[in-house]
Every structure is written in structure tokens, then in C-alpha cells.
Length: 86
Picture 1 (cartoon, rainbow, N blue to C red):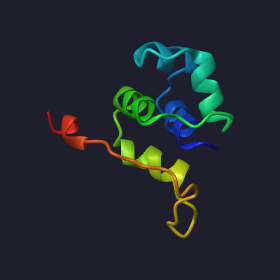
Picture 2 (tube, rainbow, N blue to C red):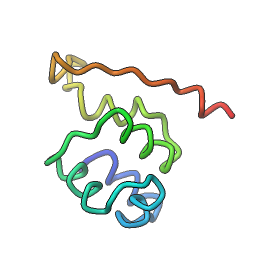
Picture 3 (cartoon, helix red, strand yellow):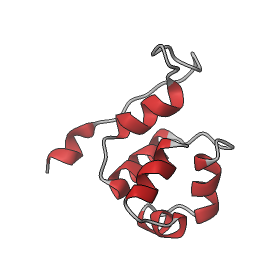
Picture 4 (spheres, helix red, strand yellow):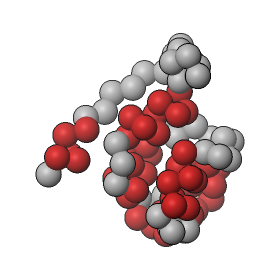
């Protein structure tokens, strides 16, 4: 199961509600959760805020394999977790 779907389900949040909370369509959330679409860094940031988790948890699940190697060497990640400290 996708980490976003797992956490969303654990928190009792529907795809529609998650989409509303992060200004993304429920279809967009569905495509990310099913692996049909890779989320942008901005989408990861919005989703992580809506789920109240560190964005790196989502990013690592999507972009790192089980040996912590980048799945896509072209992937670049730059995000600031400071907003969780407020």
C-alpha cells in the first residue's frame, strides 16, 4: 500500500477530504496513491501538511528503493521541514 493511502486511511480521511485540504483533486490524489503519477515536491509538501507528517517520509517511500538508492537518478528533492516546528 502507498504510504499516503496508508496514513490517510489510518487517520480516517477520504481521498476527497485530503484533496480538499491540500487543494488537489481527489482524482490527482488517487493517481498518486495508485502509483500512476509521481507527486511534485509541492504536492508532497501540501499532502504532508494535510496529513501532519514530515514530507521526507513520503519522498523516501516514493523515490528510494529498499537499499536507500534513488529510484530515479534525476530526482531532486529540496524542501524545508521548518514549518512543522511552529
